[in-house]
Amino acid sequence: MQANNPPMRDRVRIRTPLLRGAALALALAALAAAAQARERADADDAEAATAAYFERVRASPPHLRALLQAMPKGGDLHNHLSGAVYAEDYLRWAGEDGLCLQREDAHLAAPPCAPPASVAVNAAPLELYGRAIDAMSVRGYERGIGDPQVPVEQRFFSAFDRFRILSRQRGGDMLAAVRRIAAGEHTAYLELMQVPPAGRGFADTALIRDDGRDFAQWAQTLQPALADAVPRARAELDRDEAHAAAALGCAGAAPQPGCAVEVRYLITATRVHEPARVFADLAFAFALAAADPRCVGVNFLGPEHHRLAARDYALHMRMIAFFRQRHPTVQVSLHTAELNPALAPPEDLRGHIRQAVDTAGAQRIGHAAALAYEDDVASLLQTMARRRVAVEINLSSNAAILGLRGAAHPLALYRAAGVPVVLSTDDQGILRSDLSGEYQRAAQEQGLGYRDLKRIARDSLQYAFLPGASLWRDVAGGARAPACAGADARAEADAACAAFLRGSDKARLQWRLEQQLARFERAPRLPLPQSSEK
Image (cartoon, rainbow, N blue to C red; front, side, top):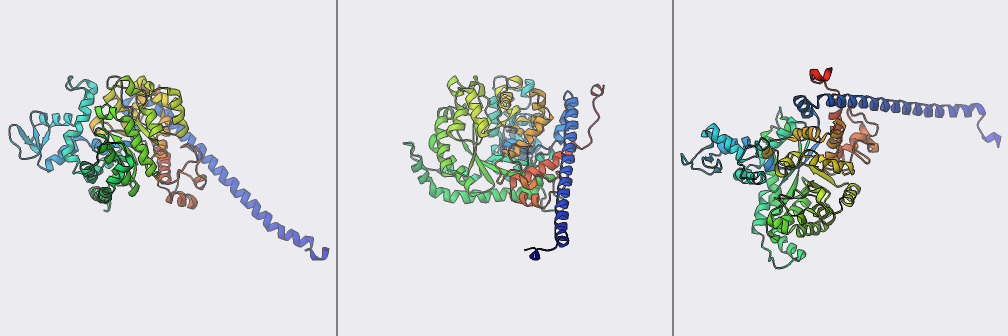
């Protein structure tokens, strides 16, 4: 037996390379672990320094605004495309199209202009031009400017009618405009609510006998028209995106920063019509979202306190449940509980969020401002926290439409219950705001610190309806997916992490945000206010 074994001297020679290889592997692993530990410590130091600076400038609005405008904010998940465009852009396009302004009410009108009752937009005096901006927005509402006989919520919702003559034909220009704004405040991703013209035409002409509630029969009736409308809508999105890319110079030698802002769409249905029309809207929205990967979900729009919207709220939730069963891959975010006792009676305040979550199965909800009026709030919050139903918080919008701000806002209650929240703009053009302003409101009115806002920025991509696996194993900012666990956000991703990122739109944007945050937290700061340095 011994004769078949190599001599001890040879066995030692065999083992030595193996031992050396194992030792080298252990040494390399130790070096990698040490490098990761140094990276984490460096990142923690940079985050702590930024958080400390944030606290020192919290009481200085100019300093805080500059800091938050430079802060990478991930995504804006609750953003109506037509309401995101500022009145000045609409008026510029109106001038290009030869439209008129009526002197009496400062509303846009088709040519020919008939002085003195109406004048060309490009010839409008400053006073009339200013009134036109007021008509397209709620400018000045927080300073008490505006007709006191017109409630601010009416002024808000009527603003859409003022620019509809343009918003229905300037889709590409609108896309370019909002991408420019987003790039200027370091927002990398937009989920824009809109419906292409083919969808509006489909719903206008859809013929359903509204003599029952047979959803399956209704859907079957609509199917032939959908087969025509969906391809036309996709072509319209192609056209608008090509126009926006050309306006931004995305294929040229010097593309504008807005080219780097990624856009997806939430196709909307309008809740202020009779049931058959609402059903047709939803049928189109789900069909387009199922057919086009750019359309990542479905949403509702329209004032929730409208007579028909209030009457049929429960019916609408059942409609969405029906379509979700037919299109299980289509994701849903719903406007809900954008209400207060001034706009709705008690029975309309007590169950809208619950129905959106339980009946419709929404993965995200927007506004949800009437939380405190819901039945069994504690149970509702537990359900939302367990299912990770994120809430799109719109602070400026809630302040304008609902008069809800400061401690009266339910943001703190959602966060205390472990419900994920994201900050969003709703209608930045009408509200004369932007996402940086929402972050500033969260800091000054809600008391959120830098780490809170950083978590919200990360969650804006974690709960985005982007396809692909998340960069994070569980919560945003926690442990990363194995392929990127050892990657350094201050450098390019290594081969394994890069391959993972190529396979996931969500993880790719999340990694970009981590890189942007790493640079932001190490960037030079403005000098501190003198009072803060003492």
